[in-house]
Length: 315
Image: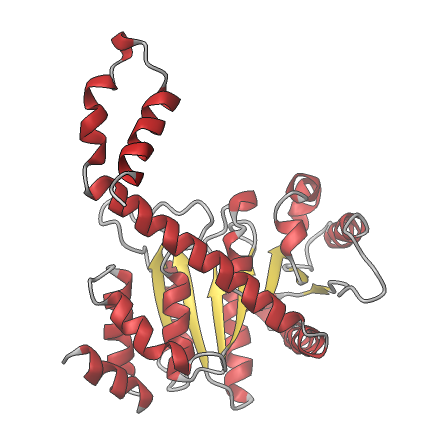
């Protein structure tokens, strides 16, 4: 089936066609740009929720339960579960999909596991593209659950409309160390497994850290929700806060501002990736290969500038 047929099929809600298009995009197939160019006019209706936080915080359980509640409310949900890359195959370990098998068979839910493939931000570089495909297919909510790698997991804010940061009571002592990362990007904070000792300390620690953020009378104040996800406690409150945040950013024109900022960053990353590929594909460093020698004592900056100058001279 060609690209046009696959795109036409997802307009008709063909899940198999969607899966095939996602595989094309994930594999960085030469047809990837054609796919995204053809479906991009269809996106914009799906609301993207990013769920991040340290490993073991219960992100998958929250994703699973939240998806079930949305399904019961008549909503459709596309889930991107970013897994650690398998050291043997380079693919996703599929742990999240196994844990979500209970909901995976539902007609209104589509789950795709993606490997990080070395991305330090906890997101595969193709996550945005896959989210676009789920959006074009027509899913009401797109949940992006990251692998949970700590402070470097800031890519989620480039992809999501609402960001949930999930921690557990034991994280209380580490919140101070998180302030330069997760604490600054969360729209909603979730203290999961709140039946454990230290839950209130964790809540208070988050409150103290949030006081250090820049705030004004018009600033969204991130709520803190206590949950026991495996018992389905507090998930309704999470959904309520997601809807509150959605309304807030819509009413205050923050949604469009955020979307435009995300698009600018995405275009910048695409341009940089293309230029880097073009740079090395042309083997323009061949002209300076003789200089790339420790014995020559040539500064790496001087060599780099020579490569760039040689590249620019071609245009």
